[in-house]
Length: 178
Figure 1: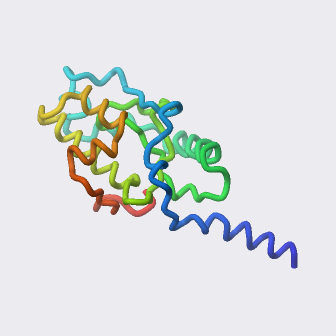
Figure 2: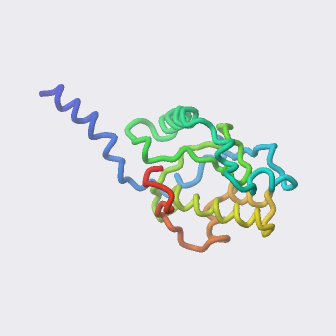
Figure 3: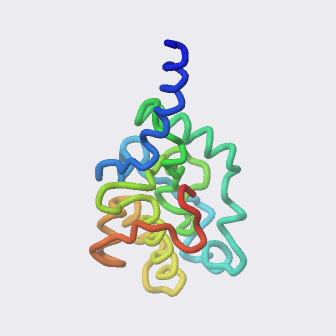
């Protein structure tokens, strides 16, 4: 009986956090470990050949899923301990690939919760990344400024460039947990 209770606890513990909303403090990465890092191959002068080119720049530089999954596993354990489902997080680039962020630097990757109190989870940040990318590619914001605002305080940048309240839902092309 004790063994069955142990097995049940192992199965239920990860599920306990499935619908959990993380505290607002978890919406931003620790600036000591994840200050953001840029890809030096992307500059203001080559936007048309890199992040603003037609045909999917990010696909050409995105690291293999195995790399980001291993990193996410290590980071979630270090930051949150055991008992959290990895699916509750996205291994996110603080400075997104579409803004010239480093694809593989651990200083630019962190386990961002999908659901954060107030709606400030990964899906809201994805909307900001798209907005800043469009502004950079249309000459409305410099690459350096976009990188700075998202790395410094992405929630404040969201409020400045999109609006005061986040949209916490996945975008049409995303599946929940992605």
